[in-house]
Image (tube, rainbow, N blue to C red; front, side, top):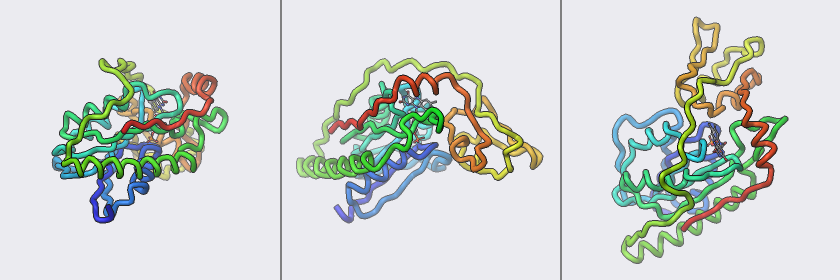
Length: 263
Ligand SMILES: Cc1cc2nc3c(=O)[nH]c(=O)nc-3n(C[C@H](O)[C@H](O)[C@H](O)COP(=O)(O)O)c2cc1C
């Protein structure tokens, strides 16, 4: 498999989904890896993937795939391209997200070959109220690499059977869980602490943050998807996001969940 080309397509505001995709790729031990990071940018032209395989990873928001990630994935088409479909979630549940991602990719010409749901630190986790803090940890990464190795074996077997790729069944149901209404609320900023370094502007996936007159950071609440990338990347801890969900998640989802696979 050393000269196989592997593409990774990832949407990952706080890095968990990208980390898992990279570890699965490592376990696959393929030669060339090309990464399409659609967290901030998308290709200008439509991209057609060839014989694959392709790893696609995204986070779970409200038991679904974030709309913006699905919108950006529209830029990619497969030609019965085998896909390894991955979601990461913050130790609550992934509900219909994995199924949704598999379904969307199938509609775009990919054939889900394998799928996995992994756990990553919740976007709302803080030191005071940690939720899946520090994950993916070493054990998760090791699991992801082993899954990658398993995927390659499965793929090889299916390849020998002349690409007779059959669809895999994953957890989740259709109609998908109904999404909650968009609440106009963005992480707040402590102007005293903010040094206008611009770290938050660099990481915001929706370009919702701007610097006004070189002296004020402005967050457009309509564009904000509450991913908390700005909160986690701020070197001065000037950004915070207040939500009642944090306490609820902290109190109710402290028991460690483990990754699940579908092959
Ligand atoms: C708006 C929003 C909704 C979320 N919904 C869920 C959820 O339904 N279940 C869950 O376990 N985690 C949920 N999370 C946590 C993320 O799925 C988790 O932090 C994920 O690993 C982030 O991926 P990333 O690091 O690639 O950005 C949510 C996070 C955000 C920002």
